[in-house]
Structure formats: structure tokens, C-alpha cells
Length: 147
Image 1: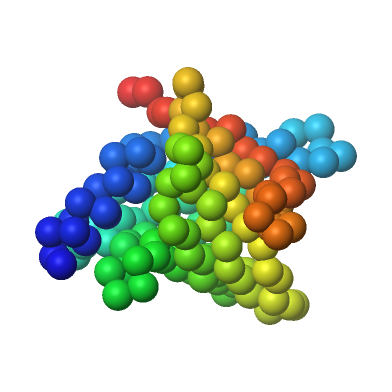
Image 2: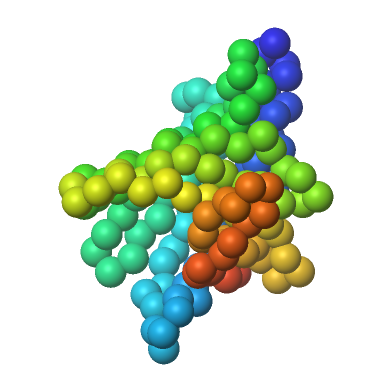
């Protein structure tokens, strides 16, 4: 079981690991705030750590594979006190679909996020699931940070 978890963890990390600059595409917004994402292995556990920051806000998320449920887990905690809990069955045709809840001080929302690699980086789509179909309402294009 431990080997299966390690191989599964590397599937997410090997697909999205690195440092990225993400530019959102929001409806009716000329240009949204650019964010920096760092996706790396946690050296002290089997989790992948996802950190992003933008305009003074930041977030830390932990991604891992849960063998008993055969699901991926994405738990995110933001500097403004909001948090999200999402699961995915893993990549389907190169796309990771995460579904779950986002809880802020004002309300709880249910939604979906899709991540997929592109020729020049990766793309995040934000929206909802309508049955088996994903309905996107916003997105972000992420490009690798070159040094």
C-alpha cells in the first residue's frame, strides 16, 4: 500500500510540480491579479504542498492520495480564513477534476476545478459540475517561472 501511495503522489507532483505564474481570465474583468504558485514535495511526509500568493494573500494546500478511498485529496487553507476541501479520482484524459466545498466567513460554496497540462504550462478551470459535464465560469493560465 505504501508503494501505491508513493507512485500515486508522484503522478500529481510530476504533472504540476514547479514554480508557476498564473494569470486569471475572469468574466467582465480586464485583468485579474497574477499569482505565483509553488508545487513541491513535502520533505517530511508523503504530501505534495501547493502554495500560492497574490496581492498580499497567500494559501497553503496539501495534496495526497488516500488509498482506502482511492481518491486524491486537496485541502487548502487561505490567509483570509477561508478554506476548501476537494477530492478527485485522478487524471481522466489528462484532466484532473476536483470537486468539493469552499468555505469563507460569508458562506459555503460547492464547485469544481479542473487542472490540465498545456503546451506551455497548465490551465485551471473554475466552475461547477452539471451531471458529468463541467461548466466553466473562470480560468487561469499558468506558465513556468524561469530563472
